[in-house]
Every structure is written in structure tokens, then in C-alpha cells.
Length: 215
Ligand SMILES: O=C(O)c1ccccc1N[C@@H]1O[C@H](COP(=O)(O)O)[C@@H](O)[C@H]1O
Image (cartoon, rainbow, N blue to C red; front, side, top):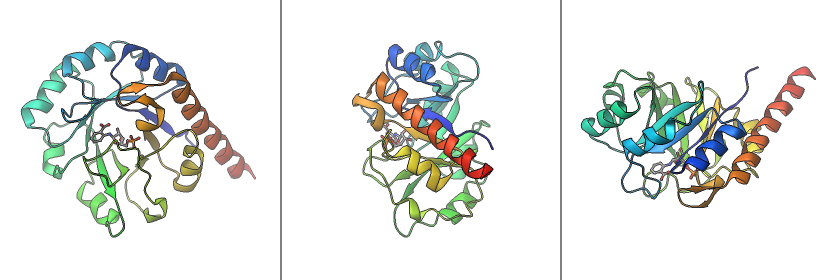
């Protein structure tokens, strides 16, 4: 069984990128949404991404960005995975010919199976809580809303932190987890110890799943 991948999102400082890499993150996210306190320009994201070793993926997060804005970010960071977190259609997400993650805003009544079908070309569906302002609100949603038979890989997100991610991984069995608020001292300023504890808790969940598979 493969390990749970980890994405640390909303990085704005060199020290935070290095902390994420040191803790074993598989991906780091840069927020290209001007209304977010975690916003970075494409040039700044490219500067930060230069610190990434091979095999750690930079991810660019967009909320209803124009095609020109996405293209500008891709020009600065051509190997970036795209994450669409707004009201984008499948055609909007596919336009760049790049792998992408599609965020779903989970709330009671939301039809995740239908949504996953609409975005069947997504590399994964990223499950976040439905919050005002599109995301990054540190809010947990009810994980029992996730059907067992989602046809795409799932990234669990929304209010995760070192204290709840083990339970989340064991309950949801996602391909990956994504965290922003739960590893911060203040919006946009990460905390190396919290990142470390978060990644350790994910590894503990992986070890527990391996034990359960052997039993
Ligand atoms: O981080 C933001 O500011 C943000 C803004 C708009 C949409 C999404 C945003 N962040 C993403 O939201 C989820 C959950 O974050 P949190 O851990 O609950 O803070 C995550 O994918 C962030 O990357």
C-alpha cells in the first residue's frame, strides 16, 4: 500500500518552504488569489520554488483566475500542478493541458459523485469545507459526507492539523492530505514545529494502516 502524500499550502517565506521539505512534504502550494492573505506573485513563487529539491511538486492555487493570470503563473513556474478552487468549469481547468486538482466545497446535499464525473480529467478531487471566501478557512467538514465509491483519487483538506489528521487519514483513506491554517502561527506564516508534527501524524496513520493490513 502506498503512503499518504502530503501537501503544505499557502507558503510565502523561504524558511517555510525549507521546513515543509525537511518534514517530508510531497508538494507545496502557492496561492495566486489576490484576496488571500497568503497571496504570492508568480515571481515570488518562482523564487520560493527554487528551494525545492527534485520530486517535491509546486502547486499553484487559483480562484476564478483569468486565462492570462494562469498563463503568467505557468510562465514563471512551468512544472507546476494546477489547483482550481473557485467556480471553474471542467473546460476552464483543462484549457492549459496541465494536470490539475479540482477543489470541491463539501456541505450536506453536495453530490460529490456527480461532481467527480464532471471533473473526471482531474488528477484528484480535493475536498474542502464550504466556507465563505472559497477556502483556506481552517474549517473541518463532516467526513461522513464522503461516499465510499468516489471514482477519482481524493485529497482530504479543510481544517486539518496534527491533532485530527491521523483520524482523517484512517477514516477517509485519501491519496493525499492538504493543510494550510493548521500549520500556521498567523495567516501566511507557517510554523516549522507544527509542520513537523503534522507530517509525523500522517506517517503514524500510514503505519497504523500497514499494521491493519498485516493483521
Ligand atoms: O489559503 C487560502 O487562502 C485559500 C484561499 C482560497 C481558496 C483556498 C485556499 N486555501 C486552500 O484551502 C484548503 C483548506 O485550507 P485550511 O487547511 O482549512 O486552511 C487548502 O487546500 C488550502 O490550500
